[in-house]
Amino acid sequence: MNSSPVEPADTFPDSPFVWRDLAWPDRQPVVKVEPMAEGAPTGEIIRVRVTPDRLLGIGLLGESCEEGGLWCSGFAHAELDDAGRPSFRTVPCPRKNRLTRGQQCPLCIHLDRFRPIHRAHQGAELTEAARAYIELPHWLYVATFPDGTSKVGTAHERSKITRVDQQAVARASYVALADDGLIVRHLEDHLTRTLRLTQVKRVASKVKAWSHPEDPRKIDDLHASAAEAARLSLEKLGEPGFRVTHEDWSPAESMLGAYEHLERPSDRPLYPHASWDGPELFRVSSGTGPFLTGTLVQDPGAGVHLLNMASLKNRASTAAEDDGSTNIQTSLF
Image (cartoon, rainbow, N blue to C red; front, side):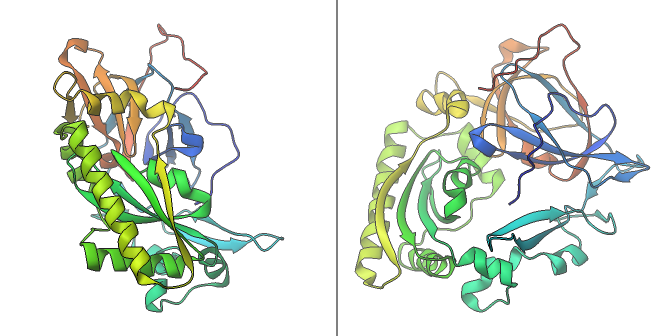
């Protein structure tokens, strides 16, 4: 979706905010938060860079607090620029609605112009801008996770790498390039039917996979087998509109610290961090997808923790950061 041209900040707001997302623009970790005022989100998104060794402590605000709880994420609006290029931007929830579950209120689900894209190949109605978006080339990839399971997924040509960066995969390969988004979703469904490759890997399952990974050699073998089976299945289709590709994804330099734990899982296990009731203060070391890795400042000898930042998504929070005794680094990982 859209990204703001404003340079990311180095610190979180001093007052309560809604944690919106951990993203990887330019393959660097950036947190998106929305400050709160008068007990509700303001509609302004602030991006905060995650630098190496930064101290990070996030605490959730309880339902009893005026600002506490889960808040609607808004909706995606599709538009065309003067040159006819499509893009999406996130619009804040018009009613600033609270939620009991999910990510969007009924109004924003109705207004969202990105959601129908997932059903476009099944005849879902699209706006002109959304249709222009799916008429551009799309990639088909096969990803394997640390537990050895594999999935098939798609990525717009403009988000070829960042889409996979967001998945917290162990290995990934691009197996086809389709002329448009309708064809790539047809190919995705084909691989699900013929190879039983799932299209979804839940965050909770990813946490378990990263904290209990398979041997790296076994992951390599399982991924190579899944990717090759996908290519063979696509070649047998004999249909126009795509070509089979042989290209591997590699983690960004900013993620390498997390991937070292997969190469030596017995020596360097990751311990899932289960609660944000704290805030406990962590020294961040790396990350991937919806996760950051870090050690407890209060007990650095307790090992490296896998911080599931997705569990904070759209929840009212506060931040505890560096007290000034540590210099903030300006270069990223």
